[in-house]
Image 1 (cartoon, one colour):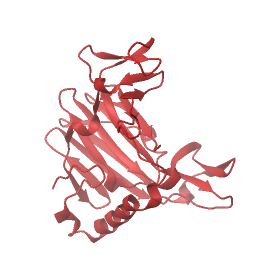
Image 2 (tube, one colour):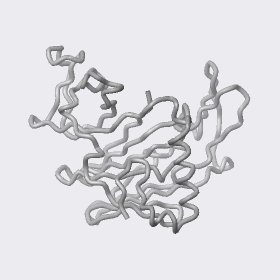
Image 3 (cartoon, one colour):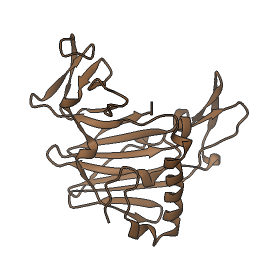
Image 4 (cartoon, rainbow, N blue to C red):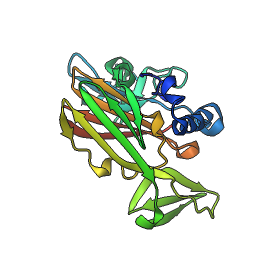
Length: 254
């Protein structure tokens, strides 16, 4: 019951046995095949993998350009690898650029099998287990404010700027439909604490588009999700290395 497709990690046999799952996947199929993603393509997550243990950051997209810093192996980055959108073979990072040849895509690591259980999806094999659960958004349990920008409105929930909902066109009372309830992780039988702050600002969850990859050599786990739609669409990748939560990287389309 394993599918390595980024957006459809569930087997067809399981889909036809679960009407609720079928409904969600049909919605996801429509999103992927219509203009809701017309804002542009998403990039890829990758980590530094270099024989020297680090990669140089160049000021410009050139091997002769000034070195302005380094990134150690297993540093998580987000960028556009497709030559249609990035013909230079260089990936932009915070301080400059690193060459693609020094990076390995997360999707090249081993994909973890997934199953559905109630309102959760579970990724499970002999080394790791990840359970992702979402819940409906209840506005009575949250403090909601708005911040006006030029042409759009930003929702602030419980004092935090959020991902997944932006309001355009003025007087719109849109609120999130759902959000993450919990993300639990075990590696080699040991629980890995994931702080609530790692996901409590993420909304509009398309959790059937989630995927999990494991780098056995580095004992690194990567949890990926593609959420929301239109101008509010985003991706997120959480990284856990040797039983310790390291952080997350948010990605946006072009």
